[in-house]
Image 1 (cartoon, one colour):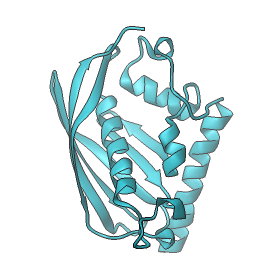
Image 2 (cartoon, rainbow, N blue to C red; image 1 turned 45 degrees about the vertical axis):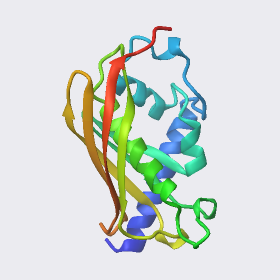
Image 3 (cartoon, helix red, strand yellow; image 1 turned 90 degrees about the vertical axis):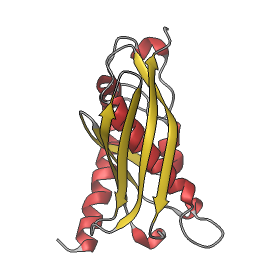
Length: 181
């Protein structure tokens, strides 16, 4: 499949994921503690994807969407817009970092049982290629490398529809007992 057709497929997949959230009643917001109590990390994220729980407002701001989940992995897709540019005319590094951090954190979250939460302790990002509005959709695929009792580590990369690498990252997350509603 040529790059232009693949970009169209990726764009359509992101639009379909957003429509699925809306059809399920979802909108940007923050879930209340009683909405997530008793749910595993995978259940919470799946509910966000279906629209049963609100999606993070950051997703709308950064034009990114959670597309895929599996135990220990997550895929986000973002399409850079002009509002994500730095003064040099390319996509700001913070956009890459946000896309990577989101995929990494969600990959870790898929491993959490009900009653546990996490927070990012360390995020290391390497941007290896500039992106622009002409770049089209970019995907951050993350996977958990280690999940211990209190710490988890994961890695992710951002690639375009042709498989070209744009950025890669690692994270360390602290795992803890979730606050009670």
